[in-house]
Image 1: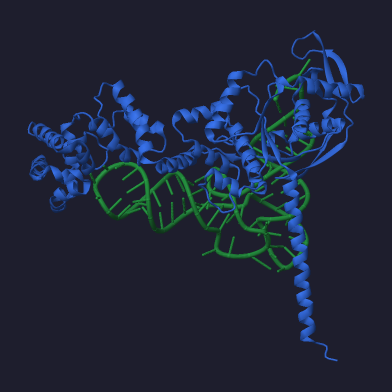
Image 2: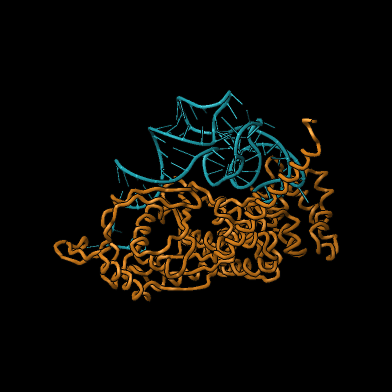
Length: 486
RNA sequence: GGCCCUAUCGUCUAACGGUUAGGACACAUGCUUUUCAAGCAUGGAACCCGGGUUCGAUUCCCGGUAGGGUCACCA
């Protein structure tokens, strides 16, 4: 008997492969059918007590990506049970700004319109002896007695699984009999959340880690009511530059203020999404569809990230560059016109529109264009610049040489036919040989300064191309006249 | 302070026991058609500390430290 039978080994190997394939297949189909039958439902539960915060936007984005990835339903739930602080204006701001970002939802509710559901739940708890009405002194007004409804806390140890962090365990005895309502028809946050999540058949609760310690309280209420437990996922909060909580004092927190400064919605969306999540592909610039395709809760980070405005600016520059030039020009014209008008500089539609490509490579955010324009940095395209005679010559170049260069360039330019001014490259060709021979800096600096009156500007050929032959020759002439007085 | 979470360049991160620790932003230098911007190239820059486990730890475990969260009649 041969102890080593190749045929037998081969059969064993084939059987092994076959069985592995069956198991893998089974697991796969099981997994797929599970997620199909799951019918995922998530929620956006902002409290309308302030303007749409970037944190609210992040919450919505993460929930949105997860839901869309799995073909789920999104519920917008306005958590306005705090009657004193909630307003319709804030609610409208949140809806408006999320929509602006490109986020949408399938169902909409307001907790203030659902008191009957909470009343029933609270009533049940009291009747079953799981909650009780407690008469105690008001914490808001000393000496005033109020009634408050508290949950009878069984004091169990609760462990829940977090999709981002794994198992988290709490001893709930220290929570005591916490308050769940001010009255049967006046629920407090935890009660309303638990009742709504169950009623709206929420399957996944994706929220900031500031809610981790709220979770055991909510599970306690769920258990008292006999409601199912959704799956939890707590993502990290983002921080200010000094790693403290991002607040109004540490920078802008309202989505609307980024919008007003001229950040583009896809840029803010992209930045906010990737601030707490990395796409498996490693891509940083992602469209909404690409993000949906790549999103997995497992890839959401565990540690808090600093909100970096520089990185946001980088994203925004990218999206600004990607804008169709026509759309860009429309907006830049608007900003330019407002600025010029405010300072009484004559408007020229043709110049403004051709200026758009030059502006586009100089700004990351619209706000920068406003700043530049208001500082008069683009005025020379529309009006004669004011020249400071001592700035005309390049450093270490004599006035005589500068005059000579400007006269030579002026002649080269005036000898050229109008047609040569149609293209920046042609204009460059007119003076390039001369400038190279005589020293580019010595020739081109005075030319550029004569045309712009600015120490910083686009190159002289671009400027000549825009303002045209006549204006260019006139400005060079002005500079020469000024130099003759030195 | 109790409880909970977290810990890689200045910042955002990759790594899933063995890598010259990778990328992006920012920064520095150089190049390109003077200036500025953009672009391109190059460069400096990190595993919080101490114990284990292991042939071997940035990676796993424990402790410390630090940061964050939360301890409402707000959400």
